[in-house]
Structure formats: C-alpha cells, structure tokens
Amino acid sequence: SLEIVCLTGTSLTAFDTDGTELWRLMQQGFIDYAHPLAADLDADGHPEIVLYCSDSDIKVVSHEGVVLDSLENSSKVFAVGNLSSNTGLELCVGYGNTIGLYGLSSGSLTSLATKDFAYQDTRSPVSLICADLGGSHTYQDIAYLNGGYYADITNTPPRKSTIEVYNWSTSSSV
Image 1: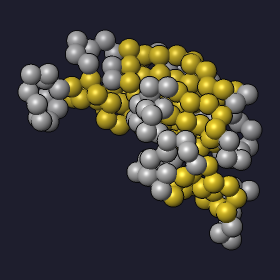
Image 2 (image 1 turned 90 degrees about the vertical axis):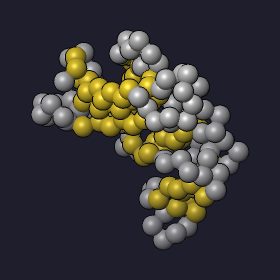
Image 3 (image 1 turned 180 degrees about the vertical axis):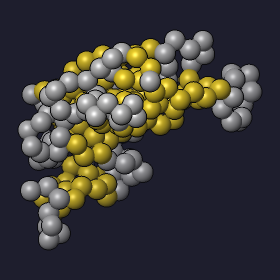
C-alpha cells in the first residue's frame, strides 16, 4: 500500500512503510518546490496525487505511479474537498477571477462547474481552501484569496485583494 509520496528533485517517488521504493515517476515536469496533495478523487479506496508542474499543468497521478490526466495551462492554486456531490471529493482550482470544479472518473478529469466572480480587473490566484465554513456539515465551502495589481505600477504589492467564500451546492456566497 502507498504510504509516503514525495518529490525527490523533479521525480515523484512513493515509498512503503519500511522505506522500500514502490515507484518513481520522472520526466513529467514536476518542480521540486511543488506540494503534492493526496486524495481519493475517484472514490476507489486509493489516493491519487495532485500536483502543479513546470509546464503550468496540474497533473493527477494514480497510487501506482501512472499519470491519469492533467489540466493544461492551469493554476498552482488548488484544493480538494467534498464540495457538490455524493460521490466523494472534487478538485477545485483557482484561475484569477474564476474557480473551477473537477471530478475524476475512469482516470479522466471532468469539468463539473465554474464560478466567475466578474471582477472588473483580472486577479491573481493566491490561495484556496476547502472547509465547512458555513456549518452545514454536508458540503464544504471554498475560501479563495486572490489579488489584483495595477498594470502601470511595477513591483508593488497587491492593491486589491478579495476573499471569496463560495458554496457549490447552493451556488451562493457564504
């Protein structure tokens, strides 16, 4: 069984509990400072590993070390939670003014929904979490921090930042 998964340089490596290497996945554009996230996205009892890569893709890797699918030109801001269905966990990705919700079935990611916050300026994704912020004890909410920059001023901190708290099951801000 899969016990420890880590980035060793630009390779994703899995070890069992006694330290024996189970598999090593190389040449996939993994970056050594990425933070792999393990979650059972397809509810098969085995965790998939989700991570951001140097080619701006988010890749989903099986517990056996096989790349299942990827989201091209994606964001390094993502989280996993029980957000909108009774089938288990979904992947949520922040894309500036928009968040996207994805499910994994038969090894493929499927877009389930998107939410555009319709800001006047394009914001940069900063962080994203999934938690039961509204206290429903049913589905989790998304807390999404994004920041905007003035285009005419370089090297300045964000001038506009927003925290959006959104609930997919009710399609509303919390």
